[in-house]
Length: 526
Image (tube, rainbow, N blue to C red; front, side):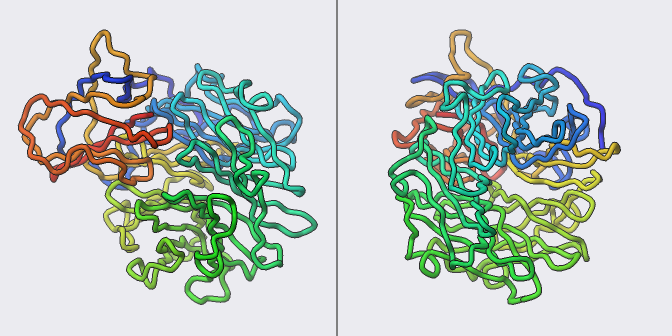
C-alpha cells in the first residue's frame, strides 16, 4: 500500500459536448491496443492504484461516481473524535487528488451535529454531485458543489434534504430517472424490525408526491420485518427494481421487488411483486443482493454474496423483465463462483460495452475482482483464471465504474500499516479495443463545460477505411440512438450530426464508435 501520494500535473483531457451546432475535430484510429484484461493501468497514479487518508482515522468508502471531466468522486464516512462524519474526496482522471476541490482532495461535513455516511453518488452535467446516505436516523440526500467540496446551499436545507420513515433509516443506493428525479432506496428499522424503504425526489430535492402520495414508502415483504434493500435499478418504462435481503443470520435469502412508477407494488412481477429465492437450494448458506444492472431490453442482473461459516462466494443471477430466471445464463439462471475456501463478498457489478460482466468486492485479506462472459461463465482471459486482486491489506471494492475509455475504475478502502483504513481507487485495463482521443478545438468554439442542448456537429478523421458505427449509449451500455450503422467510410475527414432525443434526461452519456477492428467511446452530456 502506498502511504505517500504522487503529486504531478493532471493529464489534460477534453470531453466532447457543445451548444447548438457546435463543432469539434476528433482525430482517432480504431485500432486494437495492447492490454492485459484485469491488470492495473500504470498510467493511473504511477502504478494503477492510490490509497489516501488526510485524517489519522478510520475511513469507510461506500460508493462513488465519475463526472463529465473524468474526475473520480468517492463517498463514505470518516470517524472524527469518535463521531462518524460524511466524507467526500475527488481525484483527477490521472489518479492525483484534486487539491483545488478540497485540501488534499478530501473533506468531511461538520456543518451539522448529526452522525452520518454517504453510500452512493451520481454526477450531474454541471459537475455537481448528488449523494445519498444517512444523517442521524434519517435518509439524507445531498447536492455538492462542483468547485468546492461543500453542500450546495441552493439545494434544500443548506445543501441537503432529510427524510424520516419513523425509525432508524439508512439510504443505501440511488438512481436518476428519465425526468431527472432521484429514486433513493434503503431500509427503515424500528423495534427490531426492518423494511425496504424508498423515496423519490424532484430535481430540487422536494419529495415527489406522485410517488405513493407523500413521496416515500416502506415495503413489507411477509410481515416478519427482516428486510433490507441495498440496490436499485430503473427499467425503461420507469418501473423500479429494488434488491437486498430478507431473513436473519442462518436463514437470509435474496429478495427483489418491483414498484410501479407511482410507488405501488407491481403484482405482475415475480410472485405478487416479489422474488424470494435461495440459489442452489443450499439451506446452510445466507444470501444477500448488493447490486443491480438493468439491460437495454429490461432484463436485469443482480449480484451479491452467498456465505456460510468462514467461506463465501460471488453470486450472479439474470432475470427476464417479469422476474423469471433466464435459463440461458449460468446454470438455470444463476452462477456462483469462489476462490478456494476464501470468504468472497460481492458489492458491485458493471456491464462492459461488449456485454461482459465485472464483479468486485473482497476476499479474506484483499480486494477481489472478476469478470464473466455474457452467458455467466467466468471469463478466463481476465486476470488469472478470471480473477484479479491487489495486495492491499483487507482491501474492499465497494463500487465499480467504466470511464470514457472503457477502463474499469474500482473504488473502495483498505487498511494501512498504521491500522487505520484509507480510501482506495484502482484502475484496471478491460481489454476493450478502446482508442485514446486527441481533441483539438477551434479557437472560437464553446465545447466544455456546456452540455449539448439539441445537436452538435462532429468532425472526425479516419486514419484508414473503416466499417463504422456511431451510436449513443447510456452509462450502463444501453443503446439510445444509432447515427451511423456499419457504413463503409473512407480515410480522411468526415462530419456527423449528433442529435440528442428531446425526451432524454439531462446527464452523462457515451458516444460510441465501433468497427470490426475496435471500439472507442467519448463521454458527452446533455
